[in-house]
Image 1 (cartoon, rainbow over the protein chains, first blue to last red):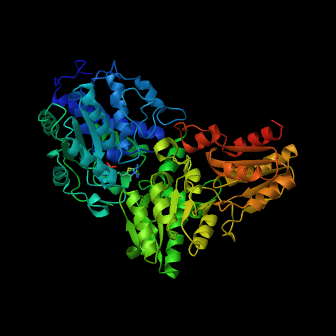
Image 2: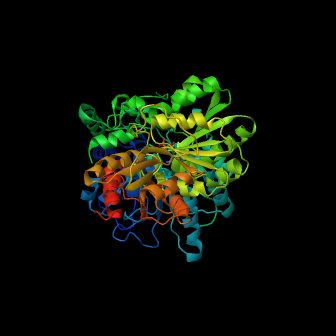
Image 3: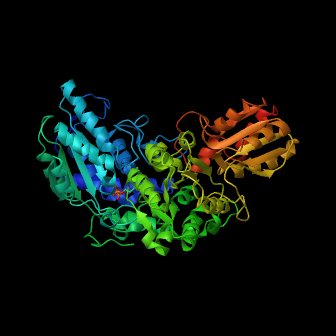
Length: 294
Length: 339
Ligand SMILES: Cc1ncc(C[n+]2csc(CCOP(=O)(O)OP(=O)(O)O)c2C)c(N)n1
């Protein structure tokens, strides 16, 4: 584990963050095997985003999970908790050995995160469409408390189908909540098909801009681009809410899963399992698919 | 838990095509499991009746309405992850002469859209059929966001809403067929879609009339949904203790078959209700409401205690909360003082 100050400076290298994204993918594959089912592709699209957030951006202190001035992170697309747990363990929020019983009877760790059971998890999720409203409330709470923490929310592009997201977007623009940062993992797929085919949400950046947000659109697998987007975030709690639309590839990092509808939930066994582990360890190859595949 | 169990859970989704086709559950082949007949039965109904519409909310691959989509693309609508919009749009469709079947996880229709169901479907008395699948804790380690242990209670307080729980694949077919011309809105509750067979053929059912599956003189187990199978297994075991158990499939929660409950009280003297639902407000409460007005008999509501379920695979959870056959057997023995 690299050196990190308690409040997380940006003293981490791109190589280190690439390594951590790889770690997220490898752990997702390992934990899925324990459960017998898991969300590989939805997690893989967000691996770089999660790594950059937790190792390069969030102001947190794992020794003090309830520190009042910490930045908050809410995983609104809660079905990729499998990618978050290993990071929290790695940062020292809890013993990584606890993950060996992932999803087994009585485990704190289910397919979706439970804030009551998991140190470092700021809010429970699983029902899509709630997270941005949660974050809005957290961000507004900073005002009377005179605190300057930021609140980060990660959403899926399919999740933007939910009406509540737009209620939150409208309210965030209305209240001018500048310490609210939404990140959309725009991986182009939901369960039943391409997001464009099931319920179109583009142009995401223009829609949020129309609701009063500052919007950036970046390549969510490019670590420099992600850190660059974080660098331009304004400080202060009043102004405009901040949106980062991250263009990603569902399943990125395992070629047979890239933009494939077949891997929203799955379970790798036998030789497939070993091959995928090797592929991830070798690092990102050029993107295998440009079109959505059945 | 074994990998098998988790794989079976994901087998309802895409990604494990071989499993989907091949896995049987307790002797019931995959082709006779509810998950595999929903799309087919709705498709058959649509062949015969031009009013049938199917809607889902980005879960066609989980509930396999994909089969309907392929057969009747012009009468299939995927609303994306926007359940409230789907349910209210269904009421609009119904007001324009269609009979829409709107299917998604029970947590995301009955629980997420309660107000839309009440105000737009029930209050209007329109023939909307809300299909809540993966009810109870059948989503296992997905956790409370994906569990529906409160839906019966929420749905049965809505005036005019018919509430039916499906027992297995053949029963699901029967419920769907009788729903076509049923007056008013309906909530149809389904399990995980991998519920073992209770009915060897499509039963002749009447909505609002319970089905007595087994005779007995010492105890009646009134069960609903997938717990009917567990109740029948428990009844067989209880014979070894000399306990003769009547088993009633109370598939319709509302309107409730009160006569069958009174008969159970009068003729068998003790009643155990079994459901995959919080013991507050569900089948057990509904039966208790009838019993306090007629006869006092030894009675016990068995279901989910008033708490959020642990994380765990479905089979582990059923064992833990004693909702499998051995668990139901043990609770029945306790009720009769043979524990
Ligand atoms: C309210 C609600 N409806 C449905 C679901 C089931 N569900 C889980 S993930 C998912 C698709 C999510 O798509 P997207 O937001 O694009 O994220 P991705 O998995 O593609 O990364 C759905 C429909 C849910 N969790 N919550």
